Amino acid sequence: MLNVSEYFAGKVKSIGFDSSSIGRTSVGVMEEGEYTFGTNQPEEMTVITGALRVLLPGAPDWQVFMPGEKFFVPGHSEFNVQVADATAYLCRYLSK
Image 1: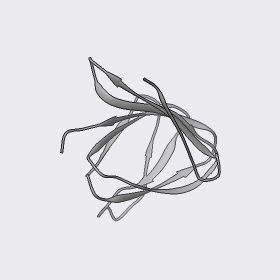
Image 2: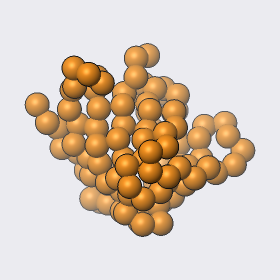
Image 3: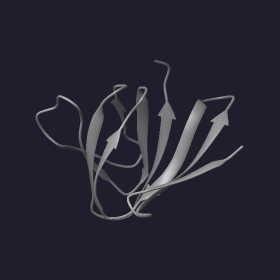
């Protein structure tokens, strides 16, 4: 079953699904902008196309992630993302 979600007035859209090989997952696109996301459980984010400039919880500096690179976000936290050009991502929801 696919679950379509939309955030930030439609500037971020994702399609969620369950996969037997990688678990609960979503794939989506973020338009240009700056966003703050909250997590319930740990997440693994992989950039598919474009680039994400990310400020992770507790990190002193922003980091840039390019296609094929991934970063991890702890559960029950917030992280900030800056997007200069439309960027596609894959998000895996990890076990608590």
